[in-house]
Amino acid sequence: MTRPTALSLALAAILLSMTGFLACSGGPDTNGRPLEVDREDLGEVGPIDDLNGINQGTSIRRMTLGELDKSVTVAAGPAADGSPIFWQALAGLPLSALDNRAYGPVLGKPDFISLTSEDPSPSPLYVKFVQDLSRDVCTQMVFADATRPPNQAKVLWPHAPVDSPATESQIDENLGYLLLRFLGLEGDEASGRVTRLRTLYSVAKTDAEKANPQTAQHAAWGIVCIALFEDPAFHLH
Image (cartoon, rainbow, N blue to C red; front, side):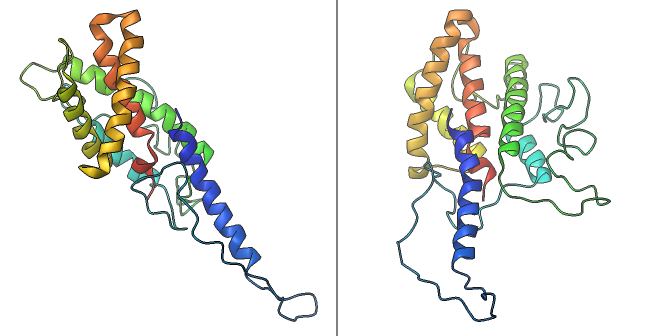
């Protein structure tokens, strides 16, 4: 999947903008005289890796770890027993992996003793942890939906059955719902992503059917869930 790469490239875009600023800042030379700098207008820089829906200015930042923790819980919805879903530091323990007692310090979460602020710049390390987060949370979401009572609304597939064949329109409706839930996108903004996610869903379902046809649709929606959590639009603003 290429989405994590896009998230990493956002950092490169910021570094490039800083390089351009330093090259054109016109600092003094060794004699204290202003340096003469040649400037050439090369036009606007295009978007990186199709980051649709994200402001392409130089102030791109990711969510803080606190914002990420809360956003994941909102997007994931409750478990079957009503408890919140979050990235667990250890299975079965009520401790978020983004807590300062877990991975928080590694990612630069402030402890207000040695560190008082968090750098919200995208980084390869953040991308790596997002990959781990998405797999853990989406596994919990699939299990939660699969074990909910029949009269309880599903979070990942409310508009598409998983125990019987789903129609193309049901799949598209569910994808549209997930794009709105995870990324806040709908209508024309979401149409291109629906097409790509439908392809991802179909490929994932075909692969999963080789292992267990009974749970293939569960697995396919889990893969879509991972793709949405790893989408740059979920993290950058």
